[in-house]
Image 1 (spheres, helix red, strand yellow):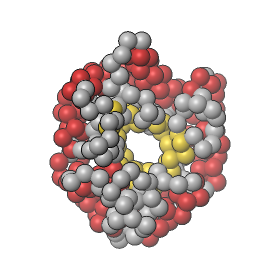
Image 2: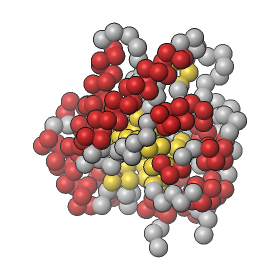
Image 3: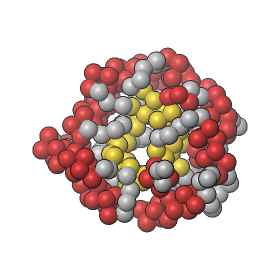
Amino acid sequence: MIDIRDRIGIDTGNKLPTEDAVEWAIANGVRYIDTRIDIAPNALERFTEPVCAAIRDRCAASGVTLGLHTLSAVNIAEVSPFLREATDEYLRAYIDAAARLDAAWVEVHAGYHFTDDKPLRMAAGLERLKRATGYAEEKGVQLLLENLNGEPDRAEVHYLAHDVEECLYYFNAIDSPALRWSFTINHATLVPEGIAGFLDAMPVDRLGEVRVADSNGEYELHMQPGEGIIDFPDMFRRVEATGFSGHYMCAFGPLDAMLRGRDWMAERFPK
């Protein structure tokens, strides 16, 4: 029987160079890590074939599974000239890097809108995700679309794919095994559906990852598990009941806090 700790990974983000993140994972018995390769110390441009080959070989030899996480600040729903093409190239560059690294996934987002232009932005983001998914199919790369956090109604800027209706807009239109779902549970607490509602309404056969942090249920926070409102044993039961056997990903605080949180959650995983 697999120890649940082996299924709970750590999002190292940009906290360490990817090479160091792999070594850190090995030293701490972490089997899944997420890394962001936008800027230093993980500038995307430095992930050449020799650099990727060394990381790829080290992961294969050690049993560490590596995933990549695009930056949610890059607006995948971009509609402006020049930036449209740049956003497409951004996603393609991540997919190319994932292929060189033999990364198990690339986390992507649906972008954001400015209230009045929501339909325009959603349509643009959908077409861009369709193109990215097609390219990922060619490269043999798995994309994971994350449900992002809702913002207060009075905010001008709002993330897309923040509730079930918006998420289904993309998943219903892109029927490809190259696009699966990354379920961020703390984001789900910010909308009426909640964690249970997402699991009831979303295509759970396309669930590829569950991202974990606690929440106050009021606004965007990535809290230490046990410090917010989420009932983690209940969450685990509901997720596992869907048949999910993949990985969970810690996304809160510094690295040592995530290691502690992993142990805390493992102790509360239903036996």
